[in-house]
Length: 343
Ligand code: ATP
Ligand code: LTN
Image (tube, rainbow, N blue to C red; front, side, top):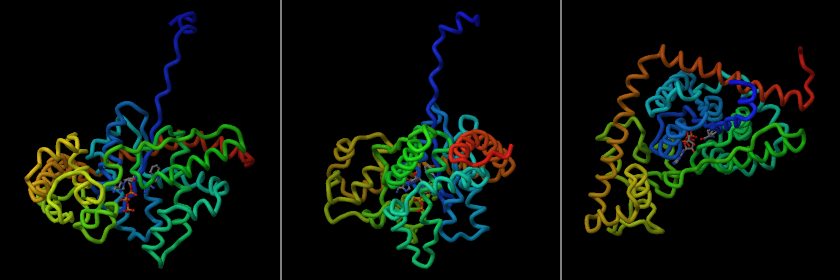
C-alpha cells in the first residue's frame, strides 16, 4: 500500500474483547451450559474471546488436591467438548498466569471492606460453609475483577448470579481510573435473556448448582441420556396440569425455559403443543431434547479427556498468550501506583 492510500484508509475497528471464567468444582451443569458456556461458543466467532478455568477461585471452598487437578483437566476438556475452539480464542488455566494474583493484591487496596460485605454470594457461601469462612471467600470478587480488567474486556458473558460481582468490577475500575487516569476498560455484563438462571429440578426456587448434594437437582452435561430423562421425569412441579408459563409455577417455568432455550420455541408455541397433554409428556419431551442436545458434548468429551498431550499443548499455549496480554495492563498499573521499576 502506498503512503497516500495508507493515510486515507479507515483504521480497522478494534474487535471487542470477551472474558469469562468457570470454576473447576465438578462437572458443569445444564445451568452453566445454558447460562454461560453456550454463549462462549457463539461469541468466539465474532470477538476476541479469552476463557479461563478459574482454579484459584475454586480453593475458596475446601478442595481435595488430587480431585482439583483432575477436575481442572476435565473442565478444560469439557470446554473444548462444548465447542470452545482454542484456534479461535485463548483458553487457559488461571493459576498458570501469575498476573491474576498480582493484580488482585493491588485492586484489593482499592476495594472497600463494606463493598465486599454486601456480596450475596459471600453471604450464601459463608452460610453454607460456616466452618470455613476464609478471607479468600471474602475477597473472591477482587480476583474476579482482576481476571476481567487485566484483558481490558468489553463484555463478560455470565449467568444472572454474577451480575453483582460485575458491578463491583466496574466500581473498582472506575475508582482506579479516576484516581490514576484511564487504565481499565469498563466491562459490561452479557447476560442471556433466556437461560440466565436455570433452577434446581428439585427445589425450583433455588438456582441449579453443580455443588448441590442432591444429584437429582441438577443435570450434569455428562449425564447419560437415560439419566437425563429420568431426572426430568422426577422434576418437582406443582399440583396443576396446564403447561403454561405463569407466576407461581416455578417448576414448569424452569422446564419451559430449558425447552425454549434449546429448541427456540416460544412459550406460546410450547403451551399450544402440550395443551391437554399434562406434565408427564412434557417432562419426557424436555428430557429428550436435552439428552439429544448434549449427546455430542458427551462424545467429544470422551475423546478430549483421553488426549492429555493435546490438552496440555492447548493450555500451555493459552497461558503464554494470556500472560503476554495481561502483563501490559499489570505494568501500567504498577507504574501508576508508584512501584519503583526494577529495570
Ligand atoms: P458452584 O455451584 O460450585 O458454586 P456454579 O455452578 O455456580 O458453581 P460457576 O463455575 O461458579 O458455577 O459458574 C460458571 C458460570 O455458570 C457463571 O457464568 C455462572 O453465572 C453460570 N451459572 C451457574 N449456575 C447457573 C444457573 N443455574 N443458571 C444459569 N447460569 C448459571
Ligand atoms: N465467579 C464466577 C467465575 C469467574 C468469572 C471470572 C466469570 C471467575 N472469574 C471472570 C466471569 C469473569 C462464577 O461463575 N462463579
